[in-house]
Image (cartoon, rainbow, N blue to C red):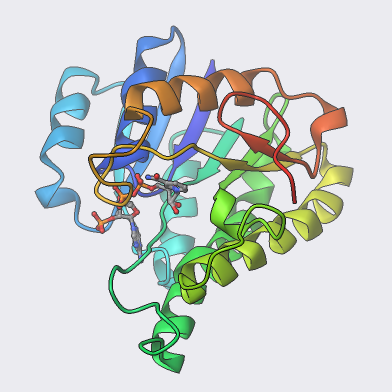
Length: 234
Ligand SMILES: NC(=O)c1ccc[n+]([C@@H]2O[C@H](COP(=O)([O-])OP(=O)(O)OC[C@H]3O[C@@H](n4cnc5c(N)ncnc54)[C@H](OP(=O)(O)O)[C@@H]3O)[C@@H](O)[C@H]2O)c1
């Protein structure tokens, strides 16, 4: 059985990851949402898969809630095999050079870079007991020094570049426990964040991400991938 923990699972890529992991045999999923009571699609999946999907409340910036999520998972399973830090934010319209504020920078950093670090640290014990344990942090091409040549997106781009460095550090610190840590660009995806013109459907992105995570080996530790398994430039 594969035991999987996914943040930001009420919509977008996170919701589709849950849907597709449920289609695989022998998976046990813990999916988080800030407001489980309004997560209708996730609730519907849990209603039809009550033994295999547990929804947990988690605002990723709330450290006490992270601790509670670890405890809730540990009450049901002895270990986790996969943790996916998927939750993220990219507030539109306020990240130009003229508009960006210290508050926006800090808020987005906290969600996109700090929270995945704290979640990884909190879940490392459960992961260390897992089978072929893997930690996947969902980054973006916008956080790549090589790829990003345009201006703007200050908070989002810088926070994801920071997440990439956090991931590199984690890949070294968690390696002795046997955990493979990677970051991935999910593609430009048709979600609330990606918008309707994006090139990939959530189905295509999630399917690629699941294949990528399934095939990870120790040699992949600390690397940056695209959803389709190709290496991503730094
Ligand atoms: N879509 C793309 O083209 C694209 C491209 C590159 C990278 N990504 C990355 O892929 C990941 C998923 O993106 P998406 O396209 O699925 O975005 P989305 O549709 O906007 O969904 C974002 C998810 O993150 C959750 N979230 C945001 N802030 C949170 C917080 N403080 N605490 C807990 N949950 C929080 C949201 O919960 P609420 O519903 O409660 O807000 C939602 O579940 C993100 O990390 C994003 O940066 C997306």
